[in-house]
Length: 227
Ligand code: CA
Image (cartoon, rainbow, N blue to C red; front, side):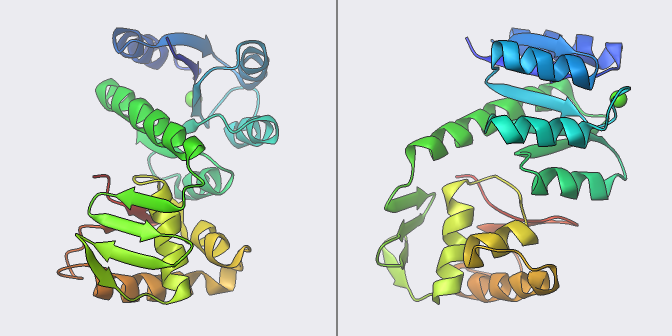
């Protein structure tokens, strides 16, 4: 049975989320503040953490920083509507997904499952060939085929697509995509990612105005559609 650490100070949300997660087959550990969260995390090493950013004793982003210093355990952050900068910083700090409050507990369970599926898939992959739906990426040869048909990409476009395709469904900020391509993020170049994405879509989407593969996450970045 897999264990989810639920870090949240609102009792009602904890009860509801715990209820749904347990019915979904997860063991749930709850912590109502940052200090308890870190202690519980270190003692039990859960498979995933759901982390509210608005905690009574410390900034949830500091909890996330601390978690990331010691593990790659997947983290889903919970943020209030409108806290777009928190959401962005959370993803930059290595959160795997986010949910905006109020959220449906059913969707939380679905997201927990999806994040576990893709992070576990990623662990097995340093794969030379990446399959994502209709897309097949031959990494050493930088070759893309869609439904068996070869498509020419620049090295940057290929690296960008490979980063997205290694973790379908994961939301990447522009800075993270830049880092995937160049090994380093320069904020002033983030908009360049939009141009590369536009070019990629022109090559791989049947209708670039209605993309089915590379999806825009408004205000954040991009993700590859899950097959
Ligand atoms: Ca809170």
